[in-house]
Amino acid sequence: MPLCSIKLKNFRNIKESEINTDAPEVFFVGNNGQGKTNLLEAIYFLCYGTSFRTRDDSVICNNNSDFFNTSAEFKISEDDHNKIQISFDGKNKKIKLNDKIVYDRKDIVRNLPCIIFSHNDISFVNGTPEKRRLFLDQTLSLYNPYYIDLLRKYKKILKTRNHLLKERNTELLDVYDDQYIELGLELQKKREDITELFNPAFKDKFNQISKFNGDLEMKYHSTWKKFKNIREIKEFLRSKLNFELTTGISSSGPHRDKLIFSHNEKDFSDIGSTGQMRLISLILRIIQADFYSKTTERKPLLLLDDVLLELDSEKRRMVLDNLPPYEQAFFTFLPNEDYFKYHKKNTIVYSVKDGEFNKIG
Image (cartoon, rainbow, N blue to C red; front, side, top):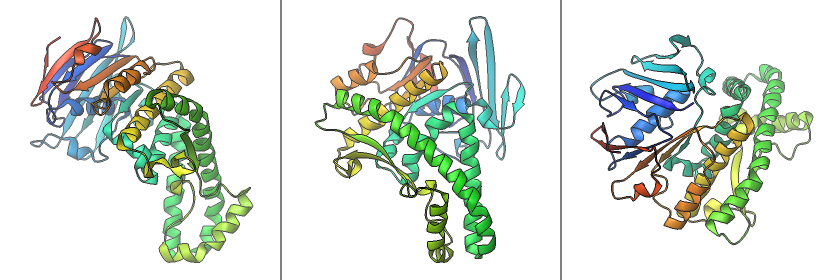
């Protein structure tokens, strides 16, 4: 379902405009700070109803305004188009699909699936446990709306449990712990399964592209992994009760778990170079997109935001050669990059300066 055109008003520094994107590949070429990444953010926003850079919609508004409007037309067949509109009025966000209000943004997740390759992705490898888990949660949410509901339910009961700990309400804690454990185990199992599924492809691609001497594996470290059943987890929670009543925080569960890239039983983020970790994050996005395509039999949009800059020419070529089939791809480049090396017959190229997009090819 490729995007045919995008209309923006008051979105970051982008001048009010309608941008033609009706091509398999679209390049945005410009210096840093001119609006290239902002345009990719707008596309992501139209796909998911949220930004990959911030959770605060108000910061997206142009400096001189307190609202923004975004919309796009996309093909569902050669002769039929759909329209997605997302607006923010300073307080509330409104999503419309073909002029009908969408009340839950999870209902548009599969509408325009896209995969963003961003500099921030390195946090999947060397970031906080929350940032590392984000890769797994994004992957599972992308193709399975039920996982979004599961994650929401777990976060809700976790919030309730932490409140009860702070209130020292041990009677209700015992009631809620059964559901807390049940939801947590289901969440843990889905993350473990996807990690195990991804590991062989990850190892192969990393060794192929990096020429790394040795095995690098994806592992999911769970705080409940050593327990065999619900009874053992409940006993463990009881043993931690005094500590948790003091801190007011649930100290174990899938919200404490971590995705690890392990080499010789060590966390690779402690020993690997920045370039190697950057490459890992690119490979994660490649296998994520490939998994989505094979699972749903649909090709995603790909958004690649200057992520090839830090790679040498050989690794850059190999990453591009390993990109999975896509519906459409958007690339950002600096002016001094040899972007025409990647130019194809129908590629659209825009020069980007001060938030303005001028077609140059």
